[in-house]
Length: 179
Ligand code: NI
Image (cartoon, rainbow, N blue to C red; front, side):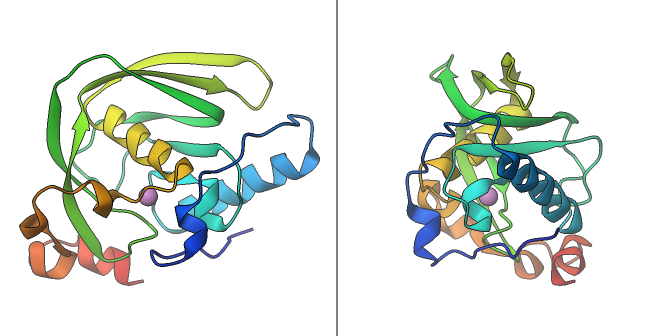
């Protein structure tokens, strides 16, 4: 079921989410299925449970090709419960980000370029992975949602934050987000 995505300004996006305690809870499966339905319907590349108003440390992300991020390298489709993040470098890189909770806008956000992350999968096993580039950026963006942080709070250069149709007037991205 496609769920409504909360928009920036909703206080539920600013909470530090609670850990998932019961992996067997059938409601958990339903929430994950709804998150995928919602992410696919909106052409998203990631979604965190707080974005649909669910106060849990749970995220999904990944794609083979994304119309929203046509330049991005593919990222394995992943569901992570109670994820963790380890930063493996001091180096950061600025890159464009958008968010389904901040529709129609993009901004450049500094993110660490090399990370290790992990968490529990739906079947109860654990995953550990290293990531660079857009993959690392995407994970850090979704992980921030679990701590109540939206990407505009990370922007250092506010002159590179704005509406897609104004930033990229010739891009098909604007039409994509308008539907
Ligand atoms: Ni987001």
